[in-house]
Amino acid sequence: MINRITSLENRSYFFMHYDNYEVNNHVIVPKCFFTPSVIGKRKPLGDNARRAGWTGCNIMMKLIPSTAKIPIIQNGIVRPID
Image (cartoon, rainbow, N blue to C red; front, side):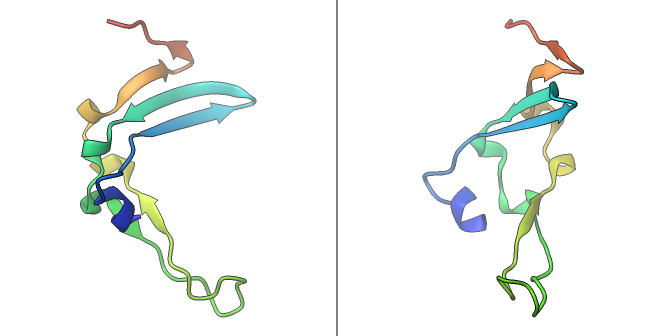
């Protein structure tokens, strides 16, 4: 993930939260806000895992400024385009 977000081909991300087949929140975060500081390393998979030793990551959404999160749907309501 770090290699991807630091490359010239980094992408913007869309995040969706849904419940019971209904979208509650849909947010766009532009690529310029994805830096290594918002990526949290997970512990490697155990020896019994199919991909033993593989290390994943988490995107730490709380570390991304709220002004960087562009809401499309917020609390089940589609946001108007300004």
